[in-house]
Image (cartoon, rainbow, N blue to C red):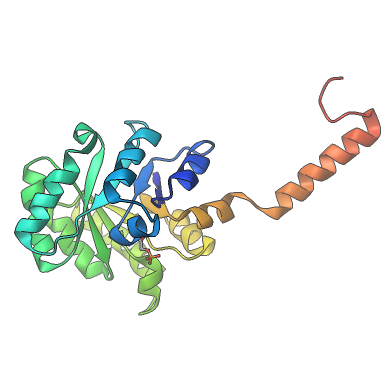
Length: 223
Ligand code: G3P
């Protein structure tokens, strides 16, 4: 499975990438604006911070077919095209652009997905990844359940698109989709930290150290 960081916060990406086997970074226009920096700068820095084996996902801003294609070409040329994928919202124009980009060999993630039905069409259009917005879908029903069902539907028809579940607000949503075998997830830094940093572990480690210190007068294995 693949685990991506959903962020354009370079410091947060460096922090998490230093100790977790992260498969890449996904961004979107809002995420980039939140960085408070110019998009070119952010994307350039992502290519410096991540290895070439780690994927970078950047989204088109244009909403018309020609504009989507032009911006997709620009994004796809980043880092010589190595493991760079273009995010395209599943609008009518976006769905029209996806097969064209695929035929050119560009990696595509269909994004802004609010229903399994939209995801189905994006998969049939040839998208490599599908990003259902899990938490936002929960506003309309069982977002987690719909994504689990989507993974099964894709398998049923032998569609190659990988679900990359996105828009998580808490660890439980991520947990449920990981337990269901979702092939990829993209998660914001605060939720990733909450997955890793359980306060119980810190208490247990402090207790081990205190007991060792009391018994042997040191905090290392050997004196
Ligand atoms: O990757 C898509 C995601 O960033 C949307 O998340 O938190 O705006 O619902 P959110």
